[in-house]
Length: 219
Image 1 (cartoon, rainbow, N blue to C red):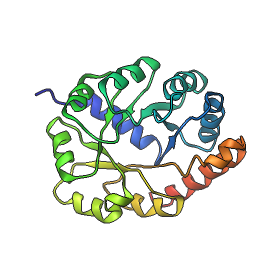
Image 2 (image 1 turned 180 degrees about the vertical axis):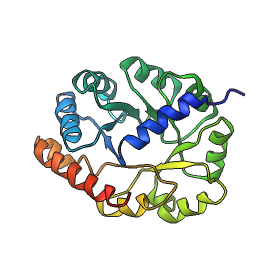
Image 3 (image 1 turned 90 degrees about the vertical axis):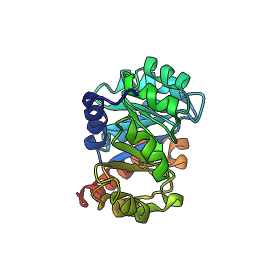
Image 4 (image 1 turned 135 degrees about the vertical axis):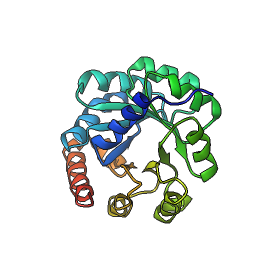
């Protein structure tokens, strides 16, 4: 069975240690991609997860990579190997999945873009652990037990770090970041739909900056 190399582990660790907050970005209009991501980057968020929840995700990754070369731009909501290949070609620097399959875990071992696999149970975590993964997205965090679940998982898996995502808000992110096994927190509160529709990029920068300040106070 192929196992994750130390180089791949270091690459995903770089993503999670670059920023304690990772915005979950859904692009409904391609024209919003660069200004939205620039607003987040200007607020101090150097890691950007652009999801494939809409038809514009892949194109947005390509455009944001060009516009913000110093940011780490990755793909989220990747559910298949074909999508994995597509976002790699678009320039994604990391890949995040909502769940795991053996096929995706094996593909991630040898891929150019390091994988942060999504799990919500100990059994799924064990699947990834066998392949050498030591960093996981915990999703959907709030409905899967939240802080209490991550505390429980720390016992049998002391070598694992998490990025909880799903239902987390600015005022609850701090609860996760106090845990030793949480490397970063992902959230869509950083990209409020009403601000995007209004193209209020300054407000999004302010939200990012304030959220990052709160997060760093827990480190």
